[in-house]
Image (cartoon, rainbow, N blue to C red; front, side, top):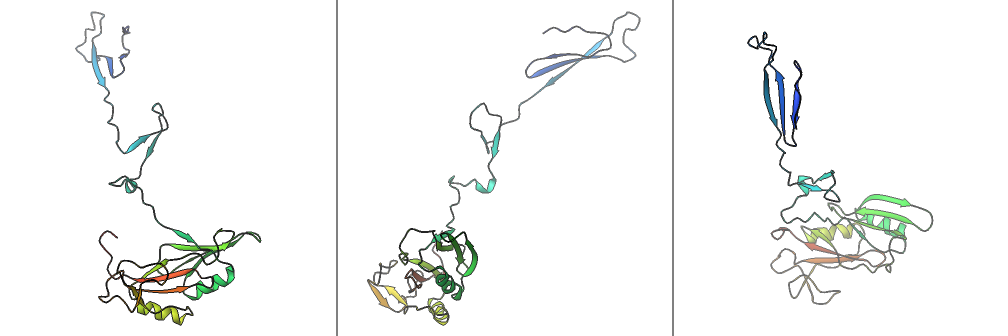
Length: 226
């Protein structure tokens, strides 16, 4: 592209990545008597910034929008955390269930009634990051059908004694004859804690007023990665 030069003015020739700027030379050595002005050329070059690999393009390649992925969500295996937050259990009498769990020491987080046909109650076991929800209109399952809800404790005998004192009917401590988790119901139960008091091997169980089953499981030292 050509550009005319006007004395005392600035002329710019621009390409997509390079700009040539012609500046008038105002120094005393310029040819004042000749009627000509000298000019100086200044070249400006733009270098595109590298793309950030942690930015992901928008819905299409032509979009100018980008979405920043927070560093704490970028995992080595590219899988986002999936944290178990709530288990819904079916009950027939909401107030009775609420009183039972509060008596056991569960924290009452919420009790939201919304008319006669919908009510949400959330309680959380002591020290747990996961909660349970029960109420009216929150589950289609039969009351008492929740089975095998595990509460992890560091001393199953002490936990049993505390729950008994709070009014729960807790079984004697038992372990499974096969030593790997436990069978459904009462099959293969052997009285007493695990012979070696191995982690994950000693249990006790109780039920809420509707028959939803809870199991205490003793874990002192978690297995690697857990």
